[in-house]
Structures are given as C-alpha cells and as structure tokens.
Length: 370
Image: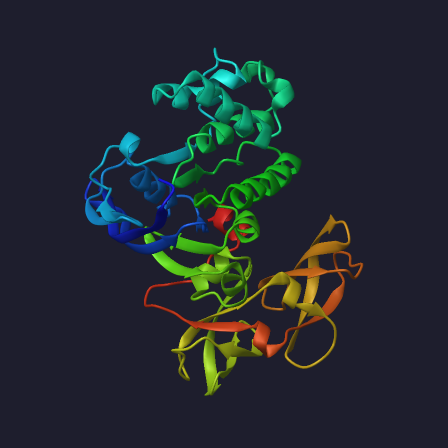
C-alpha cells in the first residue's frame, strides 16, 4: 500500500484467562517511522506486535490504517489482508527451499508474473547482500545470513509496515551489531515503516525514531531515544533504561525541583521529576557512569567489592557502610577493598514519587538468596 500515511492504535487490549496482557495501547505511527516496543519479558510487547499482525484478535480497541484515499479499520481483517511483512525471531524459513525460492515465495502466492517475481527477488537479495548465496539452502547459511533472508522475504512484498519480533536475539554479539546497522540501513534506503520488538535497550536506542516502553501490559512512556535516555517518565522506565542504581529513600527537603533524599546512611541532593513532597518515600535513580570516583559535594563513601574489566572502563560494584550496593563505571584503576568517595551531580540524580506498595528492585544477589 504505497500511499500509506499513518497507522493508529486506539485503546488496543488483549486479555488471556481474564488477565490483561496488553491494555489501553494508544499509538500513532507515521509512514517512514521506526518504532521500538521495549520492555522486560512478559511486558506485552510481543502481544502488541501479534495483535498488529493479526495473529491475535483484540479483546479491546481498534486499529486503523490511513492512506491518501481515507481511513480503514484493519483489526477485523485476517493477517494476509493487512499487507504487512513479518520477521520472526526463529527466521521461519522453508528448509527445503533455496534462498531465492524462500524470498520469492510470497510473490508467487500473489500470482505475479514470472518476470516481476524474478526482478523483485533479485533486488531483495541484492539489498541484503546475499547474491553469492542465492542458491543455497537455509541450513548452509550462518544465523546472520538466515536472518538476512528472513528480512528480504518480508521487504520483497513492499509492505506498508514491517513487523520485527526480536530478530537479533539468536545471534552472537558481533553479528547483532552488524545486523543492527543493516536493519537501520534497509529501513532508511527503502523508506520502510517498522515496528520492532526488543528487550535490549541499547538496541532500541540505536535503531528507533521513537520508543514505546511497556510494563505489565501498559505503556509507561513514549518518546525519542534522547528523551527516554535522559528523562525517564518514572522509576520503572529509569530502571529499564540503564539507571542501575535505584535507591528507596525519603525526601527530607523539597525546594522547587531540588530534593534532599536520605536513608541507609546516604544524604544526597537530587532533582525532582514532579509530584514529590517533603516526607515522601521516593526512588532516587542514577546511572553507573554518573557516579564519579572523586572527592566533592553530594558524595558518599564506599568500599569497592567487585571489579569487572571492560576495556577502557571498569564496571565496579561498591558498598556503602550500610551495605547498599552501588554500580559505578570508571576509567580509574580500582581493586576490591579500595576505599572510594562517590559523587553525583544533583541534576544526574533523578527523584521519583512512589506508588503505594512499590519497592525498589532487590539486588540480584539478594534476590537469588531470597
């Protein structure tokens, strides 16, 4: 559908056994956008994708597709009538068919002319740089090459929307990086509209124009990579977006956006994200790279516990006198047992209100022990 201009999800929901797997999803996707659905396992991102694809019927809401000719409701259509391409985590290639026949299959089902099938198939194979492997079977290809075939099979149909369900999760780290670049290149060069599911926040940040963060089936925040990276809407988003230090403290003083937080032997100044009053229980969030090993204001002492070498930097876990674990990234050479002072700029310590019954995530060691 070449004149596709917009896809709109209105209050989309899906229930299983009386429980919401996805609820009240409102989202408008413009033609040419790259949207990442992001969140931990079980958050509803794959459910949302399958509802879009037509593989799951909605239990609430509707999906609309706008073109230059007007708007039509598509959630009532079967998957094959929606005109979308799908790239699965498992590749889902026909093992007995060559690369060329796998890519051509959908075009042949549409009964296009032999010449048109060949032209579009050759072009798709060229785009994913598999010309030398066109006559091989999937079993003769690497994982990255198989994923390229799956992408070619999706884009050869010239779909109005491409849906990708964690397509890189089965690849090793080096291949994931290479394929990430390849997917973004294809998206841009073909002018695709893409909805991409991942649990990897780095992958989402590098690929997407906008991110949709889900938790327990509900949208937590929609925004650009920059917005989500620097200003998470709540502490759940912050926790998922790399703010590894989530501290459950008390707001002892509030002056405008400046908040003094205390607890567990800590007293720090942070920046309120709104809705925080003196005496409130709060979550204070800070990234490991924003905890600086240096003397200064807004500091706490700690003892280095674990050091992981990561090239130019070290990933360090240090503990305060009360036993609170703090995660730090630093280029200073540290060793277990070193006494350090950790400082943080107030604007880098984000302070969030806490809903009744919420608690900070337990450190992994405590969770395993518990």
